[in-house]
Each structure stands twice: as structure tokens, then as C-alpha cells.
Image (cartoon, rainbow, N blue to C red):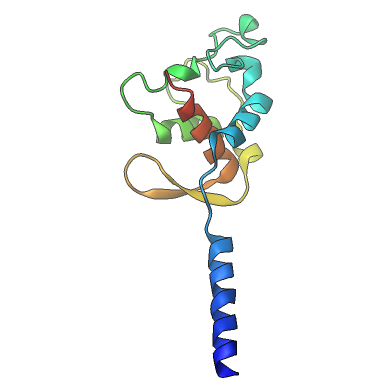
Length: 134
């Protein structure tokens, strides 16, 4: 009986540990969020040619060229999407999506080897944008 209880408790602990282990989202999850929140301005393909882009000055950024300097600027991209930092951006009128992107967190390496708890929807957008870099 003691062995049965120990095995049962061990299995319960394993299930709880697996249930709590957050996983990074895949690009399709971020793509759905992108299509709902970003495509109007940045375009379906992310090149800045959305249906609202023609009436905007300055034009929305081409999100497929965020890695032009060789690395994808994860921390910067996260801060722009959530509205934390728009310093020096030509399109400072971009809406703040931080409140729309709340939820359970996942650990995201923002480029310095330190994992930062990030709301899953925000991490999903990040992963999607990273996947469309040219």
C-alpha cells in the first residue's frame, strides 16, 4: 500500500510538473494574432503595405527587415509591440497592444541569455515576426 501511494504521488507530481511547464508558442499562433491586430497597417506579408497604410504618414514599417543588422532585436520588438518604448520610432502613433496581449507567461530569451516572463500572446507575435525575416 505504501508503495502504491508513493507511485501515485510520484505520478501526480509528474503530471503537475508537466502541466506547469510553459512552452514557447509556434509561428502559426503568432500569425493569427498578427492578422487580427497588425495586418491592417503592416500588410498580410509584413512589408508595410496594409489597407490602411496608404493614408498613413509615415508609412508603417516593413516588419520583414527587422533583422537587417544580422540579429533579430527581440527586446526592442517586444517593447514596441507592448508600447513600453517607442523612442525614436518614425511611427509613434502605432497603438499600444500591451493590454490586449496579457495572459499566461512563457520564458523568452530577449537576446542576453536571460529568460524574461512574457505574456504568451506577445511571445507568439515575437516568434511569428522572427519567422518572417528576409
